[in-house]
Amino acid sequence: MYKEIIKRTLDLLFEKKYILTKALLIPFFLLIVIEFYSTHGIGETTSSFYLYALVALSFLITIVMSINVHRILLLSKEETPTWGVYTFGTRELTFILKGIGLGILLGLTFFILYFIAMFLGKAIQSLLGSSLASIYSVGISIVIVVFIGIVFSRISLIFPAISIDKPIDFSDAFELTKNHKFLVFITVLVIPVFFAVVVGFVYGLAIEFLMALISEKLSILYSLLNVFITVFTIGFLSVTYEYIISKQEVIEVEEKLNEIEFFQDENNFKMVIDERYDISFEQIKEDLLNQYEGLGFNEIVVDKETSFMLKNKDNQEAYISVSHMNDEFKVETFNVKEKPILSLD
Image (cartoon, rainbow, N blue to C red; front, side):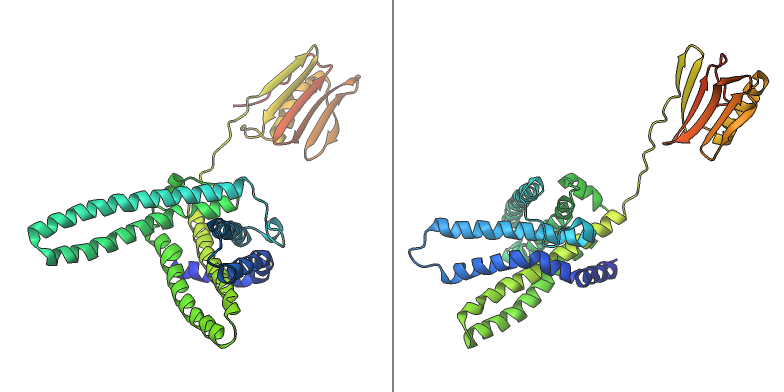
């Protein structure tokens, strides 16, 4: 499973590298501008509104960039514009609101667990001493972090779903991942975080070296590094979502069988039969021949794969016909006193 997801992620990123490059070109340059002004355009007199505006703009660009990456990786080339999607509509708003909701949920969960753990820690310290309390503190901290990470990784599947216009709720994400908790935790959180730390550290040192050697303005390279890490992280989330969805049982919902429709107008009759009834086109033809042959309808004027017609030599204005189209059989009689009787169960 893990190898499959890792391989699929790397293959997709490599396969769609040119599409990703084009789609992320505009966000990348915008992030460079923001990085430049954040680093070199801020002084002591800079208003807080200016800072908040830059942060908000950077956040919105990251949201749009994330949605574009999800769509490129999960949808076909025809469904993703060459230069990405930069409209801000229901999809983007839902993405943001769900993200805020996830943040609130994780925050509340953390504080509840923290206060419970702190209360138990004080009880352990008073009963068993500070040494065991210290061990407990380390252990419970790890447990809380892992628990929060598992919750986050499971719910985060909402983001690729929203991005491809198949939104799901938190409960749906939990249901999808109920049999893949550890897998999702590893592929959505552990691997991307490990990658981000290693790559961020190595290339961060390289960027700092270039900034010291050439110019401080090369800090804009951090934007490139951030985009690279973001794409890699989103890639793992997208492929994990794709994998989880592929493992869900497909429940085929059978549509209700349409009742046979019957229309009558004097000596004209019409029947509309759902093809899922236990009868075939050939059986209907045979039934009509057997019923109307004795009434003189023994001249077959049409006998095709999906249409059949009988006529009476003595009454050319009368006919019996059957056709098969749009998942239905249509039986019609014209100027015939006897209505059709078929061998339907």
